[in-house]
Length: 305
Image (tube, rainbow, N blue to C red; front, side, top):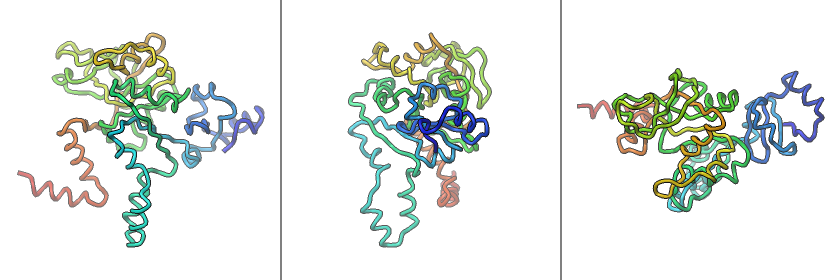
């Protein structure tokens, strides 16, 4: 890892030309990206660091998860915490497989920060609660009640980040839904529907359009790559129904000054906010479990009518 304030401009350019460094990051905020990410130009020199590879950056701990929770959901924070009493017990009983499982829940290169949303004032307000942690950097928003299953070597979220770095346009993940179900989702308005794994400029989002009037069949999934300026827009977004601040309202304001793109996912989603969606996720993930998958398949076959 090289700190920007320890090398000259000439040395930096020489390292880039020789491909000695390929990635840069903000050491203070624990995030990183490619050398061509324009958000890095606004970074303070004393916070900027360079890496030979993504692997080195990850090893240096340049990844961070921000959980926006409520006091009633402390179990989520506890899940990522260490339980030394349990770990000691498992070690004494030589149950090393279980010990390995609970100590590797969170990869060593990742950190988890939790902030509280004191009142349920909408998704936009929840995102705004993380403003002081995010700072002046672009960030991803992942809604945890939607699971995205993707077995590709480069998953959908990685492709969204890559596209954002290329275009500097906010990315909203979408998936195709049957035409008779469009009235259940937020549907994006695009001139041309993108192929899977690609993005297209969108004109807006129509919330639960009536069947036959939807601008497309592409529904918003719950994954976003957003520029830091969305925080300022959220601070000034008028509150709507239920006194809530909606993220889609701030995105609509963002569209007045720059492009926003819809990224069409390649993977599969599971809406765990519904009981049936949750059960469907259990089935799909269960049959692929490395230890229990085969037995689980057998159980399903036993129950088949």
